[in-house]
Length: 118
Image (cartoon, rainbow, N blue to C red):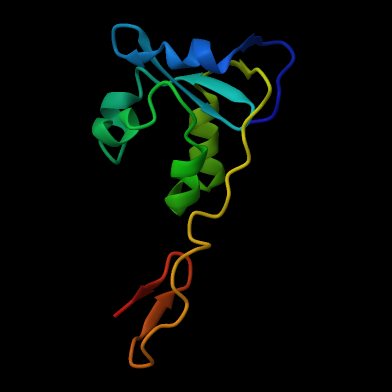
């Protein structure tokens, strides 16, 4: 989310201290900081997936898993917003930009990014 001036600002180091249920599970997305401790057990992909990002940014995960890029999912995340990320997020590069482009012509391509073919 975008910066919300009415909220406290947290450093990346402070977010990184929150990696367990005991300390609280915090993540960052763009310019926002979120306490997703209560969401962990109900995350549709399972808590183990969410825990991969505990204490850090989820931007790269969301770039890879496009199902997160909906208004509905972003609204759910915003409900857990506790602050702003100092300095903002590091831009996510395309995680698929280096995938091979020379594919066998017999493949039936289902999507280009990520490449999915059979």
